[in-house]
Length: 218
Length: 218
DNA sequence: ATCCATGAAATACAGCGTACGGTAAGGATG
DNA sequence: CATCCTTACCGTACGCTGTATTTCATGGAT
Image (cartoon, rainbow over all chains, first blue to last red; front, side, top):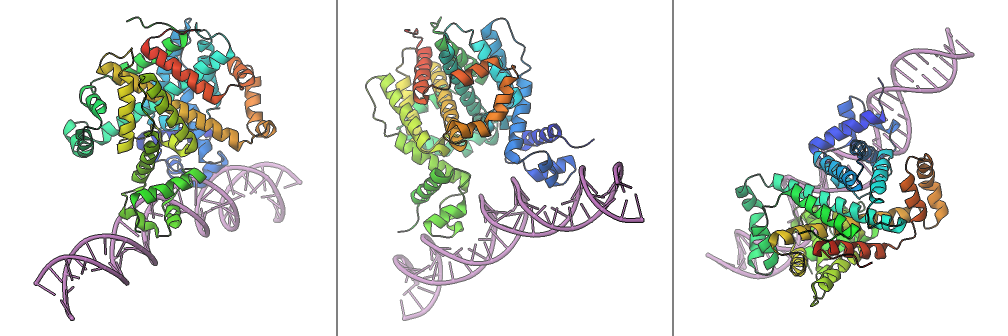
């Protein structure tokens, strides 16, 4: 069985999942596949095309979201699959928004998203749809990026609070004790208990409510 | 006059502005400063700390936003300064959301943002503030990233439409002609005339309206 | 039996971050 | 005055990166 773009992408994804994008290199992928480094260039122009391949492979998983009859349910399904994918493949969030996603599966996801969003009450014409899509995508990209970043720092500083205090703590504590950042200090002290998934969902519905022009029910 | 962290950061910003983050390297910065590459490591642990320095230098510019009496005006001023900074230093958007921004100026901006947002009608307690801040930051990061990415592709494919047709055109046109992405096709064809700044402002107010629970007035 | 195309490998190059060791000047201390 | 120690500075070297180029082997067609 010869090499293929799919097999290369799969190997690259395996490595990136394990060691991040920094741990990814042509030589490591080739090693994983048991071939010489240059073999990959028979299937891919350069590594940025390889990254595009990896991204679209993830979009393929996202595209499997089942469409609902209600636009909002469809949208939520897509968005949550995207979040799951970003948390499963953290490198995905590093690439999010960094280059245009034009692969076939990315386009399919974009199509489903746009189609669902076009049914929302607030969007009446193409311009509305364009803007709403932009707002949703922007929120999604930013939210996933920050959530992954928080995960990484939480992981690297250690699961327990003592290690965190030791590494990031001194600098931040000193900074907050200057009294120049009272609101931030309150956020750090009192606001650390919020669940990430819940916050994500809350903000997502807030944004959708803003798009559809709905009033907050609470 | 000896070297300094500020001078190194300024040189690095100059290079990154001109040639992007890929065109940035220890040797080039040192060359710009007329010193040996290893000199930098007397002032900086590694290049990721250098990136943090650069980011905080940009936040220093953003922090100069004048506070208004109205929370919304204050917020808009900060956000617009951030957008201006991201468009002036495109590499800034590459770093946005990719690591925690804990520099003194970044903290100052975060403080101003949080203080302003805490005055918004919709936010009643710290949890509300935490969430609202997360939503705003997520939108900001995602919106700036995609806007910069669009700028880059528009620039690289050429200002005129013919060059765009020649490079990205064939693949995308072929894809859209398959009929599998009708909504995306409509967006690409009919929705390309929207102004980026206007879209940004529109979506920003949409989000803020969603946070404060205000109804759309149109 | 010879030629040629095709698949695979090896080699090479410029550039990267950075570890390490060494040098020259100047101010403090004996 | 002589010594020391700090500070600013420089050069070399290592392992790694993406990728261009060149070589090699092999198997089918003529």
